[in-house]
Length: 131
Image (tube, helix red, strand yellow):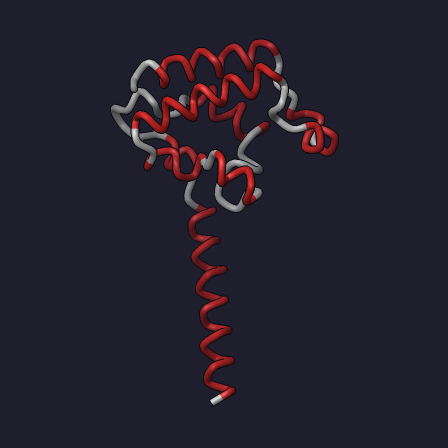
C-alpha cells in the first residue's frame, strides 16, 4: 500500500513537472498574440517585456508577480481586465516601481530606456482604449 501511494505520488510530481515544461515550451509570443485582437502584444513590446518583465510575470515566474499580472494568461483576460492591467503597467513603469530594484540589481540590463517606456505606455493606452 505504501509503495503504491509512493508510486502515485512520484507519478503526479512527474506529470506536474512535465506539464509545466510543456507550458513553458509554448512560445510566449503565441500566448500573447491573439489574431485580430488589438490588445495583443506587438513584437516590439514583446522584446522589451522579455528583457524586463517576463522573468517574473510569466509562467514559472515569481508567485507574487504572476498573481498580479501573468502574461502567460494575457490572451485569456477579458478586454476590461486587459485594459485595467495595461493602465497599471504604464503606471508602475512610470513610477519606477517596475522592474523592482532587487531585480535590476541582478539584471542591470532590464532597466527600460525612455524610448522603451514610451513605447509600452503608447501600447497600453491602445489596450486601455479598447475596453
